[in-house]
Length: 151
Image 1 (cartoon, rainbow, N blue to C red):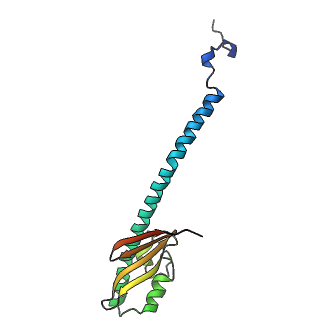
Image 2 (cartoon, rainbow, N blue to C red; image 1 turned 30 degrees about the vertical axis):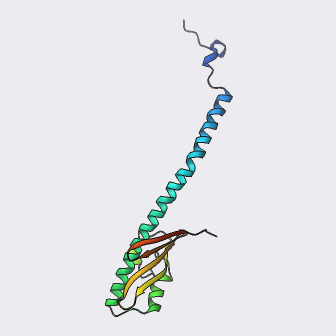
Image 3 (tube, rainbow, N blue to C red; image 1 turned 45 degrees about the vertical axis):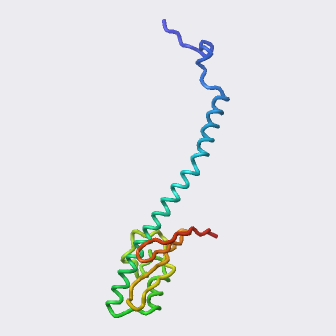
């Protein structure tokens, strides 16, 4: 005949974990998590910065194309350049670069400066601002990336 076991039938080593053992295990997990989290944050931040730098390079290429097209169609004055490229976000259809940049730019990304060689009508540098990062691209290369503190 099979008899159902009760708590009083269990041996002392069959009761499971004690509260102290559970608290000790939780403390170990918290300590390990505290040690790993800063490293994870650093890696995530480095990846975010690399993605923004890639966006800045694409925005530079888009600005080169836009300026070349505009110059071949009859020139571009400084005010038109300012209005079309700098006044609005790159994700705004009113921006001159929108047709080149829609779909890859982070929402709210914008150019804060555009430098040109006026003699040859060629783009020399841009300033790209996104999510607190300010990235400078000169002649197709990222030369500076700065994280600004958000207010």
